[in-house]
Image 1: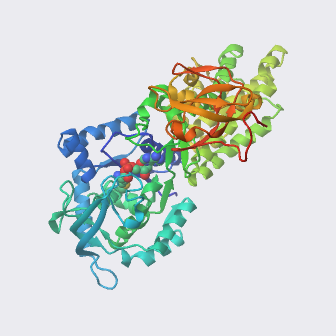
Image 2 (image 1 turned 120 degrees about the horizontal axis):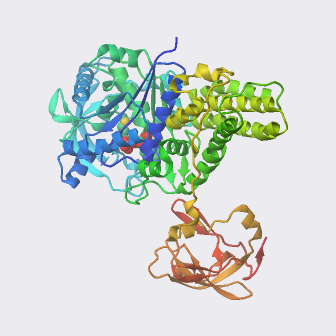
Image 3 (image 1 turned 60 degrees about the horizontal axis):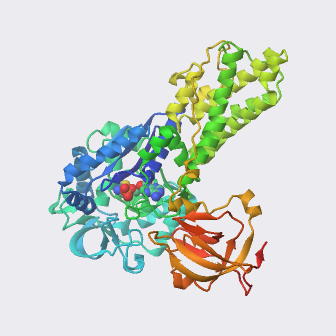
Length: 636
Ligand code: ME8
């Protein structure tokens, strides 16, 4: 009998609406839990919102509303977005819920009464004198600052001096380190585990567990002039959301007896991997089994931030791609666990190649042919088909392969394994060409090909259903099946479909999308499109050029107009480098340009060629020839 499975996401701050960063973790948790459900396991999925603390109080004040009323509004955006994304949680905890407040007060009382093994109180009173970043809700040391500002939020921290209650972390460090080293607290990926172990080497100090000058929070049961530090109560959500101090049976089931997994990005590693288990140990409660910290992604090379205005609302993606494909696209950008970059320009191409061309087309061609040539009834299996044994073997192995990846949090690898079967099935269809077999008088053989493809489609739909729950049901519907068919056991069974069952399809499951990128003529897109693809690259004539003069293009922040010498002639080009080079800086530089391009007009200014530059995040550097080559020197 498998233990029940309990998974959590972080509880998100409600100072702003959700963006795709929040969606990314929430979708991942949702699909991980759905995979466990496929195996027949009992599961509980908790998410929620972090609503106390200075950051939220300030956001509410800015909006001119009382904090609670403000939270009540913003939380709706989270709930609505999760609903729109087909996220199916079992519990949604808000830190302003009375049951959370009661749980936290109980935990705080227990911690205040508790003593370490050597009899010292775990909570003691002292004075905190130091720095605090409200945007992180985090105490900072001088060493953590970069150029005097918080490295994450680029704002100077507040200087604090106040009476606080401290948590005696030092009493738990040795024991905790051993638990992590022996994987009794399993931290993954390994890189993050090493990072946590590194923190022990750098030295960890007792931390403030309360705040004196903050009003919007939970007052300490033992000193109402202070509120619980927002992280202390936020971490407690993982137990307050499953009955701690309220419903002991529920708490025993999901905390003491289940496999417990916390999911988040690496930004909140220290709180979860050090503070939280230490708090639990101090309160005499079991620690979690696994903490998985996925990577932190940028969007088009930049950190997502409100100030940069580049946050993507998951609802905008849903509008363009639908909820299933949005889930798919977000999870297939880069491997789960690694850092990555989400490039909006890749979404349409990925949708068209994987979903419209591969999966959607497989479903359409198989269903349409059964409708056209077999009266809409699934034909019987047949013997000795080209590649038949191989595709069956791949399909039969797939459930185990997918679950092995999922149990190691390798979401992308699991999805790619399923897409592998899609591609095998398309190849199998093409190689056997059932339409030719029908024409050449071998309808039984054609029917056998279609039967195998229909079975592959059923298994694919089942194994991709955690990622794309509603589209999978739509695909199963084509085969006349409903959600009762969704189980790992069924996916393990080949020859599940009854020959003769009705097959019906209307329209495409994933209609092809137009690539808007090609039509978009905004300045930013023009700059992005300066990138060449491989076939064009071979034709590009690149030469060394010298910048004779440069000036800004009126009304365009990013553009410079350059007069250049390319040896054989003088030319004008427009380049999107104005945010990185002033006209004075670039004048006189030797650069590399592609000269055989059609002249283009950018913001009404003629441009005869493009320059080469390297860009990462906010950095851009011109590609320059090393050594002293004259203008016109060819680059091969
Ligand atoms: O930290 N890439 O809340 P938060 C990947 N309230 N994941 C991202 C991301 C990105 N660019 N941006 C956000 C808090 N996330 C606390 C948590 S838990 C006891 C308290 C996701 O609203 C990721 O899961 O800042 C990250 O850990 C979380 O949002 C931070 O959410």
